[in-house]
Length: 188
Image (cartoon, rainbow, N blue to C red; front, side):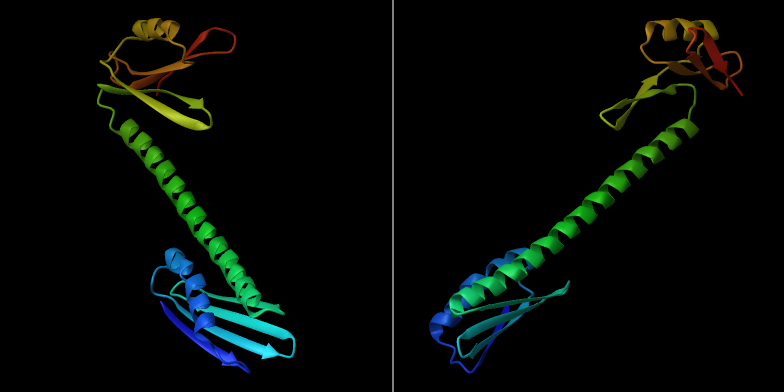
């Protein structure tokens, strides 16, 4: 952390220097040690101004505080920079969360499509059910079955359909329950 303090119309005392360094330490937690500050302190009549410029690899921030007391001006300038830094950090975290969420959705959809492509008669993907806006996929190891066995399984199941490999044709079929209570069979 590199701190440069400039005084305009004022002498920088060791107390002011120590106060500024103490207050700026918390930014090392947010941005790491590779940051630099330029603090400009100005006194004009009854106005005491503190302007802080923060430079890091990611961004540059500026905060300015102006009061009748130098220490209050420094605090105001630091608070402004801190708000900007936390806002930036929350944006970075949100972007990372969205990317992670998109990657997990892509992985789920990729695993679903790959498991459907590699059906060999032993692996059948059963119904996906929605639970709190998340899709849960169940997989079961199955042997090829006849349509009558699929009808029995559908009648014992809570799912609205059964996906199975037909033992007669060797093709994947879908047996589903219609709204009127009858059963439908989808086969290519």
